[in-house]
Length: 112
Length: 437
Image 1 (cartoon, chains in turn blue, purple):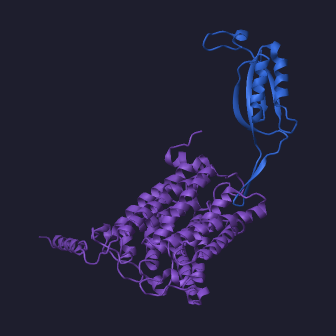
Image 2: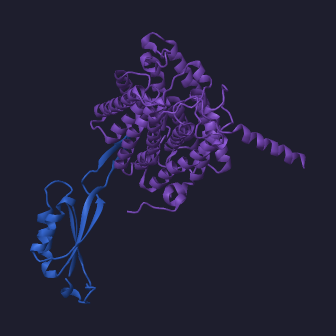
Image 3: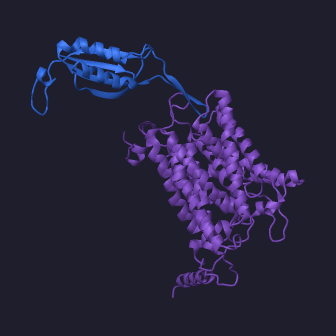
């Protein structure tokens, strides 16, 4: 099993969710985060006081998938989240040791 | 009986005898004026609660929002009670050149028929209440200069002492028949008493308390400018009571004052915004509301004395000059007046008071067969001199009085929070509360 973490532009969240749904990866966790890579931040000015804000708002999603679905999931996310401009984000794939469904106690592949 | 007890008894009897409420004969209470002034009093209180609370609260950092609002609420409580107990009497009674009288301590002696010589057609208690709301907002305004770093206890004690040391004397000199009024100074609703006082006190306080940690280096961006906009909305509309109500009676003068107020706010907002647009490429919402407040502060002393077109000019000048004061001047001199109390209220109030001497139009202040007050444009340059003296005296007394007040406060409770408390945030450190997510 893998846990796939993606940091993407927030407005792309719905597209990514639909794409993952289509390939059979149901369920994800989403948080609102701030970050930067190559994308520059912006400057805010309040009555003459300038503040440079380096961090850009992003959406971070985590989805757990069986090994068989991992490649398809990464491709789905990449295609749906891509705009072609700097700041599209990154996808991280990490091995997942164990999964348990809380309500039923099902484990691993049955819990995904 | 012990001589001290009988002497005390005589004093008490005398106090009660001399505070007996005035009876009918002098009173000429007008229902319309009274209704209008009750509404005006409510409008001015709304400017502090929640107008100023929202305006200031929205502009500080999240960790200090509640503490900043607490200052407005706390000031309302302390100043109102002290005004009732002592302030009103010392400001608006008696005929001293420097200070008022003691015959309205705790409002003993104010009866159903009582009337103030300064507002003959409304009940005296209403005149007292209206003036109370002015004292409240003046003290609350000062807090903006030292936002994010002053102890709550220090602020409350400051309000109490500063009211008596600076506000009450100034109010007496300008409005209570004191020496500045006798000199010919005209200040319709508080260019000197309210705005210049608050501004100068703010500057002195900012210098004495010192800059915020990280000023000039860290991000001190506002928590939520939407709150600030709502706050200014309440201030703008409330100002109709602040300036309109300063006519102390319902009628054309109040209406002229309200129109002047509104037009000055509009031009102030657009002028500040225009300067900002030109120099920064983007006109900010903060700039629009700051310009509006600058226009409102500047028109305050002039509102019952100038024509609408003159109010437009005053607003435009205020928008430009205060923009410069809050950006270029502040940066050049390097002081941390967090919410620009000096740049907007101090500079705006002084400017407006002087411009009143330029634009005063006699027709607006003529009453009961007496000619009104003319300014420079109507051929009376001496008015400008009276205004300048008023501004100078106010600045001097306020600066010294504020310095003395803060030295006392510092000795009693200390002025500034600790570095750790400032880092943690005043909401949590001083009030044990947090805004949450």
